[in-house]
Length: 324
Ligand SMILES: Nc1ncnc2c1ncn2[C@@H]1O[C@H](COP(=O)(O)OP(=O)(O)OP(=O)(O)O)[C@@H](O)[C@H]1O
Ligand SMILES: [Mg+2]
Image: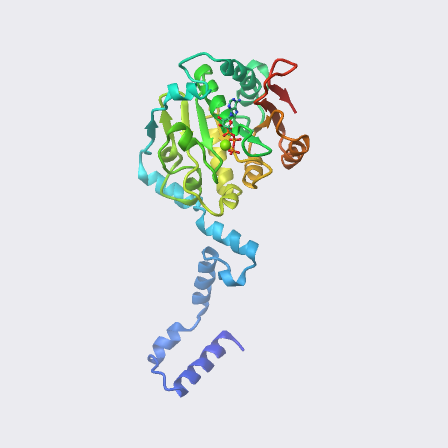
């Protein structure tokens, strides 16, 4: 039975049931003319393809994320209309950071010397210094580890500080540990929009999430509002676009991502897939070899993985640093 026959049958049933129906002309207008069918088909292309109850669980998650990820074209239009972004500024307590063992402009420390060695190959891969060809997306550097507490945040902050203080390039430190962001407490950053908000909101631009600091070349992007589908957001096309924007808009800018542990969450693996370089922190004497091997397996598709031995009291080679 055609759609028109079905509609006519339904009308007859309603009339028999005593329902007050509109005049005949109005009914004819409501019937699916070819033009109306075309209009309906066109509008379906922008609407979700199914109601949530028709979908399997993975499809439902995908649909939910798709509905929350901001549409790129719309966001560009809105951003263009918004004008100047609202970049904030925070005064880092450099004395307190120094007291906690972090690199700061205030005092030369042993840790600053160690990070000079650590950052050298990362910078070379990122911006092609010393004649080496830069690797693809080399200025996107993720700091991760196998397990929690190995020193990822400690390393991210120190690496960012070290590069910002001694290298002629700006550094963007991104809090990519979206489920357990540590940078706000550590650096005294107020709660503000960040990475996840850029993926879900169409009323903010990258510039609205950036926090400038009293270390001239160091800028911070917080993790942003928590989201229960953070992994899917990080895996989205919007994330790929955002990273391309971050990496390509300022090719001389190094972007460092403090990240979750590889074996405890899926977010870190998703993030790793987008990065040019990965710095894997290994806590000396506490992380089992099998855990390190399992973690490396999760990022084996990543071309550049560098290992850093952390919290080592003494090493035979005199450095905490090595290649994988
Ligand atoms: N090389 C180091 N020297 C001194 N303290 C360190 C060092 N590395 C890490 N720490 C300290 O160890 C603790 C854990 O480090 P951190 O928070 O950086 O680990 P994490 O890997 O980021 O943890 P999580 O997985 O929970 O995010 C912190 O108190 C940090 O200051
Ligand atoms: Mg951390």
